[in-house]
Image (cartoon, rainbow, N blue to C red):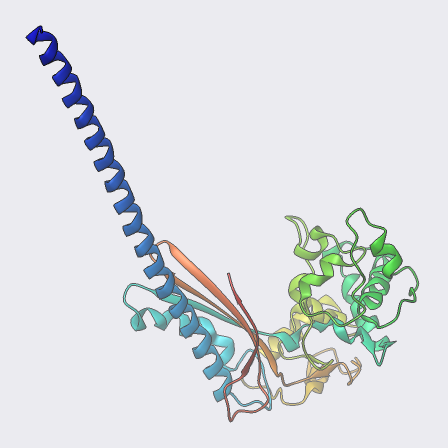
Length: 322
């Protein structure tokens, strides 16, 4: 046998073996790195979740310590960003961003129906809100939308005005039933006839309605914490200038906000009447949003809580991680 041929074959075999060894080593190295990265991500994810949960607990504690008889932007819970600024000292390389929103300052859409009948006072408020220039709806569109929302949450299958019941929703390209029950999440409005994503979330040119509405509450709006568009909708007589005056009044520590009729003390509003059944000065439902951050990673937890007294921590009634 030619020794040169044998040497050539041996060399090829060695090269093949070395190639296999190198490939296996590289793959093993890659897999090892992936496991390390996955472990690090899992570790950071757990850390982020606990940071975010800490923010939720601190938010609940702030609400517990607050005087439940009156709620306004002057309360400690409304200064949650100050708590956020101090959170970096609590964690090694991480912090949380905390916001607390008063759900009682929003329009309670489930109260469009009371005892399976239309609640006229909430309907009128809802329509005044929808007709604000921010949303660009006509009077006809606003009324039709109020009809459709009422039909979605009432318990019968009778169409209200230009609303919609089961026959409409079952006839869609992708059919689904009309709920005929109170909404559990405000996002359900996206399933209601006439509610577009643009109206719900807003666009670059217009605001959306989502942040002003709630499925929670007892039917009254806290005038101390209501967003400006809702203040405007509380009465057809309230002007934009009055809203600005009301907002300035309620942010002054010199003014007593314990009685919701304080608005009559605002300059120019002595003759304005807001239905007393629509407003209050205290709240019981709050949304706490806590975002844990570390490096370039983040995790957000949102909890809706109810506070019935100051003796115990507010009870969590909704919890969402994402």
